[in-house]
Amino acid sequence: LPLFVTPKPILKLLNIKSGIDEKAYQFFLKTTQHIIRQRKAEKNNHKKYNDFIQLLVDAENHKEELHDENDVNEAHHVNQGAEELEMERKTLSANFLNKQLTESEIMAQGYVIFAAGYETTATTLTFCSYELALNPSVQERLYEEVEAAVDADGEISYEDLAKLPFLDAVLSETLRKYPPIIKLQRKAMADYKLGDTGIQLFKSQDVEIPVYAIHHSEEYYPQPEKFIPDRFLPENRHKITPYTYIPFGAGPRNCIGMRFALMEAKLGLVQIVRRYRFFRSPQTAVPLEFKPITLLCSPKSVIIGIEKR
Image 1: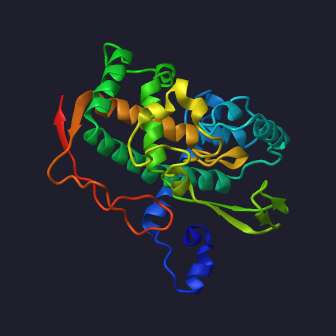
Image 2: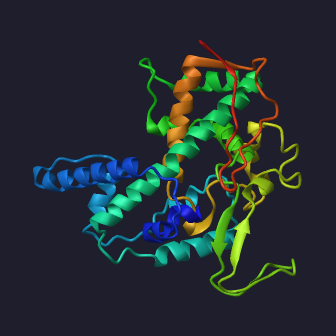
């Protein structure tokens, strides 16, 4: 992570490689720049595109309030209390976009969404496929729900996709057991005492939240090493302790791509489960071994069987 955010001139001065393929990086920036300028040129033609770049282009010349009534209602099982929700509403309501977005900022935001969303979503689907292979009853239950929701052409609408409770539960349990980011990093903006814990945070102090450890705590999740999607069904969500399920972080600075990532993963999972069945093979490792990386939850290898339905 430090290499990702450190300015390139400093890395060059220290003779440190960032790990980012410069050729691919420049290709992405040039492609994005071309799209931005093309969209601006077509603006008077009333041609409209429904994608992330277009949202940024539209926001370039507008002062818009960042608050959205859905922001505090789509916390993805964080289960914030009333006090926390009210504080978040005030924070979101106080945030305004008072400046125009530059072309460079649009390109930068596009790159961040692409870089942050690609690997984490792919890894989440890999972990989910692995758990479905080990839990055939869960897999068939998911298949039945999905089959009942798709139309005659095998398509599913955005609205219907968001209304599949077991699909959401399966993906949520995957993100609990295998959070894409194993820890969150924050900086205290003021001195703060953590309830009656005796822990005192001081302004500017760095804080790390151990997401993986919280998600695997017996105190919050009985049998944490077992894959139990029912934990996240609507009738059981009230049992989740606030802030003990945070694969996307929480509060006004949670993951900016949360909704997109969830819809992308759900849509991918629907199409995969409809077409293929996963099963455990003699080479399937139980439990999985992970790469020694400090930030991402990445498996060394995932081997399962797959057959067409």
